[in-house]
Amino acid sequence: MSAILTPVLIVVIIGAIAGLVLSIAAKVFYVEVDETQVKIREVLPGANCGACGCAGCDEYASKLAKGEAEPNLCPVGGAAVAAQIGEILGVEVGAMEAKKAVIRCRGHLNTTDFIMDYTGPKSCAVAKMYYGGRTSCNFACLGYGDCVAACPYDAISIKNDLAHIDHSLCVGCGACAKVCPQDIMEIIPAAQQTWVTCRSKENALGTRKVCTNGCLGCKKCERTCEFGAITVTDNRAHIDPEKCTNCGKCAEACPTKCIHMNY
Image (cartoon, rainbow, N blue to C red; front, side, top):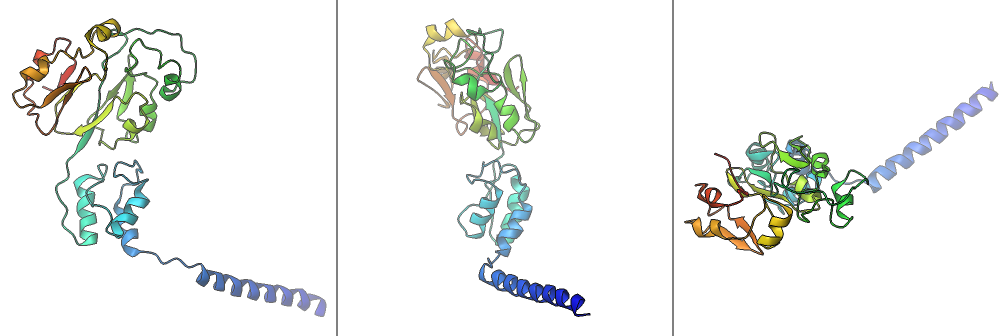
């Protein structure tokens, strides 16, 4: 009988000791949970895109709970999530402007040329390391889809070796802009209907040699705009969304039609 009781007793004693150790460890290493942070994290979309300026939704929720961030910084959740966060925190939430990503390039296969037979990994970041990429324009879209892989909403596709954005799906999170080695993705207000589809810094002659759709830096758009919304710096045009009225006159004046207008 003792041959059976002895091992049972040993197991019971070991279990009791282990339970005591775990109980003590739980108290020693206990981390107090911020219920406000937990509630906020539950309403955040979980995209972890970083558009709010934080590493992810967890960090954003933590900063919100500590009063270190504004409740209307999540473009993915939009106004609905901002309102929920405001209710949790008991604060008023300011107006939230919807955003979208646009592509500052129209250098597709019909307007620019390939200058090398690139056979490396199908990655824009990798292709960029080979003499700036495979196209004649050093500023052009490389077309390998790093932005496609980064977009959590399937809003981007590659057509004719050029990235295209479906604005019915895009939320302006900025994930594409972070991975683009050419810096051709720009985040603008969703209401903005006019943008420049070129970011080349070459002069007119240099741009003409590599792309027929490129900005010539001629300043016709700048002179045409009645609201001072367009400026040409470093041979390329840029539109200030705060001043632009989407009248479309700049797009009409552009000789290469590199200013896009959603009519």
